Image 1 (tube, rainbow, N blue to C red):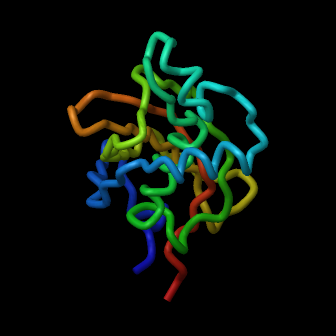
Image 2: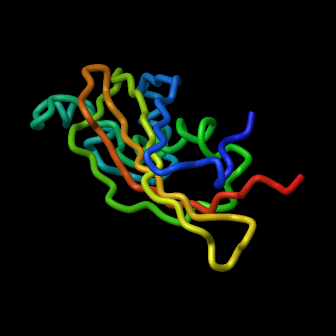
Image 3: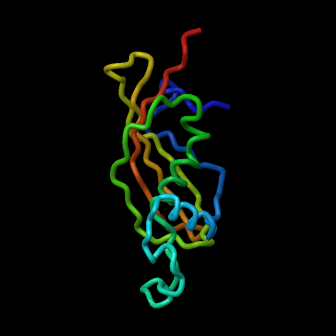
Length: 151
């Protein structure tokens, strides 16, 4: 099933994504090593025992990718032309291995594309919450979105 066409979206529209995702140690290790990030806080459990958190932190770039990725099926699958940028990326609470994330997306701005009459620009606010309902990540994401094709 495709995502939503640009002309079907409205400012204030919310998507409470049904997919919940528990972050695993493999997720964190694989993402961190594939991105060549050598930070001990994501990879070294012994080192992190004596840190403020007492355990490994999940790579925030993984959290960002997961948050946006979970939203695709409900919002932009098959209707997106391009991701244009991320703004105001925030991580107010840490994510740990074993946390289960729930994602909510809201359409916060819509405007016509000046260069592509068959598309428009959508700005989403993505928010990720852990199993305790704490906001752990948020970002605004703009993308070029197709309009419904003429019949």
